[in-house]
Length: 274
Length: 267
Image (tube, rainbow over the protein chains, first blue to last red):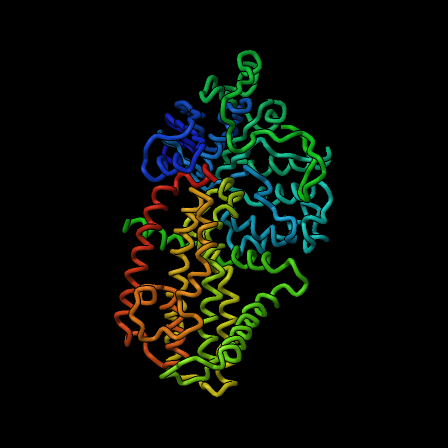
């Protein structure tokens, strides 16, 4: 933890994505360090501080740069310039399913996902029962995920991702939930996870759900912070001043999933938009 | 580059328990498509071995020349095939390892240098079992354990190091262009025939064999089981192997250093 009680410090962060049409463009940029490919400036000089224990919602439409910002905070990708410092252990909840494999059992997927999240063997063993109990999948944990009911994979993913407390919890908005009872259970679990000194940052395109979890709002629009203050004021500013903006290139991770998905893939889920 | 190498080694040591866990699950996944699963992982190389043995012994009327061996031809062949099976399982397929893990790479901070090791370790368990079967076959065929078997771990470690560097290099290249995968598939057969897996290359001076790491590693197993030659008795071949390893390390490091930051974005 930093001396001045800061949990997250973002200073002049810029990020540009590139799209390569040919392999030569990739080689030019990646190996020869020459300028190549089509550029899309996603973050344009973003700066803010978040204090230890603060609960913050980053409000923004698709392509506003919020998923990119979260991935930078989670240290998945690096900014082109500027600094993003996070003090403490991070629990990134950016994709609750982390590429679940439908042919593998719930337990194997649990071990795989927990390992990818950096959990120790001890943690994996200790948390196993509670994870499956919360997801209401204890009886079928040794069955392949493709045999699970619709929505069960997301329940498991959410349960794994939220099983352990951390100093900083990063929660991307692209999470699909299920029935009202399940949504309520998830909300309670999230509240418990982020209680106390835990710093919490979530993204949303609507402030409705965020209001239950956050007190501060940062409005991100077209790659810039355009408002930073109380969540209520941020939501009001966002509604009045921000409009959906389409860029040439999309973020490579979808920021909001479809609210309903066809039941074709073995891990499809019903969802409620955050 | 030296700093990068140290970091990669440290990362692989620190995350080794995680690597083993993920490798075990990858292995399980690879063998779960059939009911007998893991059984086929062992049966395939054994069938491969028997097939080559029958083809060469019967088809070529035993026309193999193995001067200086202390074992039957079958053991000599098996020592090379066990090495080839492990190496060939990663020679081409290893190149796709980053793509196969892209969901994880894009969602959490993952130690990227450990991904080639996960790939190698996922094949390593079958390799160890095959070495165990080779040892049992030796005993059954009258080749008793000898002091030369003590150098086996050295060759195993050298094989793992070579494969790790190879997988790292080819996977970086395949991120840039998928044509690399096609190229590797094309030259896979050439690797087999130019590595002396089926014929004796002992004493041959062609660079195809002396600078061929696969040939060196296969011969290493044969030195242990068939020829009873210590690793330090073939200094020049070892030196050639180290030179090739150094060049491959250099290429892998350059590619990894340039691309590491961008991998989660370009996958």
